[in-house]
Image 1 (cartoon, rainbow, N blue to C red):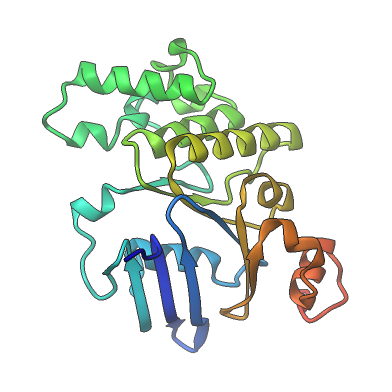
Image 2: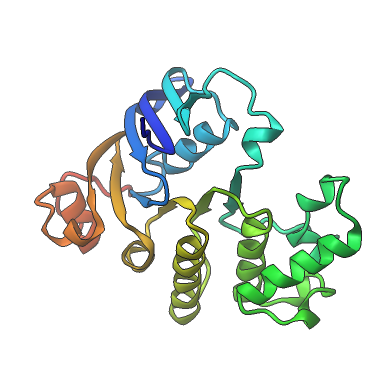
Length: 252
């Protein structure tokens, strides 16, 4: 029997009187790249954090590869299956580039520092960075290079599932395009299941197999990425046009 790699059933989460998720139903098939779109404050990041176990939902179910995980601590065996590219890179300033990339690998006592460094350099090369970058510190890198290092760290342990949190934030359009292409190549090459949150439509069109529109704490539309422009959904239409007119109220 086959099952989705990630499945959310009626997931709800509130913070005090603020209802962020109001019954999210979502599934991501194995090897699929799903992108969640929506405005700021619509619950995209909370959705990812609920799957990772950083936030526990108030209601609903979360399943990973056929096993229910909500309400339970995410053990090392489960978390080792995940990779994450954080919005701001989230690199450790006090660690060199290779140490950042190999951060999780170095927790594995079965690998020597030399082995971890070799793997880190291999992953850096995969994202287009040369070996001489390995011993630099994050502050010595441009924003685009830092993002590549973050991607190398996300794939360092060859995860089955990779999360991308606003992967092109802060990048110019050309570098954003480069990062989008790298993400698509890496996900396909690894056969990984990917879940991305973004408001950047160029990222959506570059990396998504499927798209889900999140608004007011619920999925308003879900479908194949190539149907975005003909979805007929007013929320999607307004979002991809960037129009002030429509059901999504602009925050002033």
